[in-house]
Length: 149
Figure (spheres, rainbow, N blue to C red):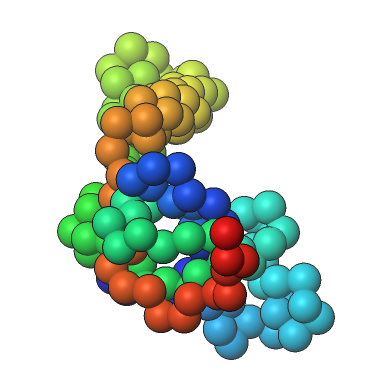
């Protein structure tokens, strides 16, 4: 998956890049007011995303760059975030069904499984974020003017 981004800052081999969420916002009637769409509202009210990227091409702050992420890795993350909580909830519901016949306890088991899955994903995300960088700057599209030293 490739998209354009702007380098916000650099730190050795890595850079912080910022890109706009366009595919999620296209065609949304709420994006006309400039405040973003429903998805943007859920994600913090901003259409811009920032991420850490490998900076093998030597981009500097202000440069417009092309970034790339592995499609398979992004699909893996999508499965973790969207499918895993549903599967765990169903398993917890089934487990509660073996223990009790009361619907309230079954639903409580499903809700607990759902919440615990997101808690686990949060911890997994924090651990992975420190060790792995899934985005790479592959090309500098436009270099900003830099002061001469």
